[in-house]
Length: 308
Image 1 (cartoon, rainbow, N blue to C red):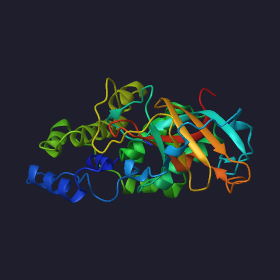
Image 2 (image 1 turned 30 degrees about the horizontal axis):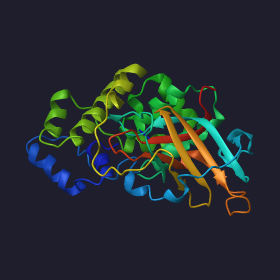
Image 3 (image 1 turned 60 degrees about the horizontal axis):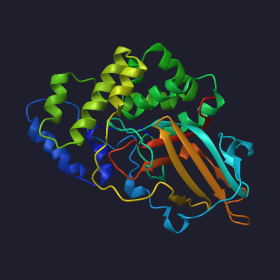
Image 4 (image 1 turned 135 degrees about the vertical axis):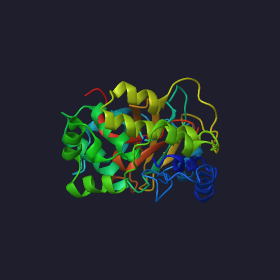
């Protein structure tokens, strides 16, 4: 939001998990290494879940713009909607390590948070609104630890404190139950050798991040692994959608994402007068901005204002 290394590439609609798992076993028949495809991936939301795009609204002019932060807040930090057009420059988060960051003109669509770590990721994002003193970078590092399946006990003291502020003891324990071991570079090569790109690339990125989180690496070091620089290729399963595309949320309002970077997203909400969406909650922590180019970053959303 920023996975189980190879499994997350299935988000592009490519090779099935069973097929990839079989390939891993063929590549490393005599090496006892963690099964990177065991269980459900921490975050599985992908382009196939982004089914809410509304092309009929591409030329829509929503009218005067108001601040989303002017709305009443819910208990989880979300916003209680009223009729009108609202926007906010929000803190967003990488939930897809080993993929490319956003660039101008990218299309993004709404999809719900899915995956085995759905509750943990949602809790981190919701509870972050109650702790404005926690830096966005620390929240991002914790999310990277979750989606890379790092062990809580291996995190540095600073991240352990952040995690304890944002998660319950039960949730902290579940991080360890779903964690993967730190692998050496040689073991990573054994696991990923023979796998097609970008599966191998994401596997290497997540393995590197587990090792770096255990070693106390800096934010910039982690960022260089999680967020690829340069011109992104067109990922498998990508679709052609303009940047102005709105998504019609199941609750009845429209939402649109303009990713300035992986850490900053302009969120726009339109609620039609008299619609069923009036009085409903927009909870950013339950949403993911899905790129229409599957080679790019999947962005978890928060109700925290960027730069605040």
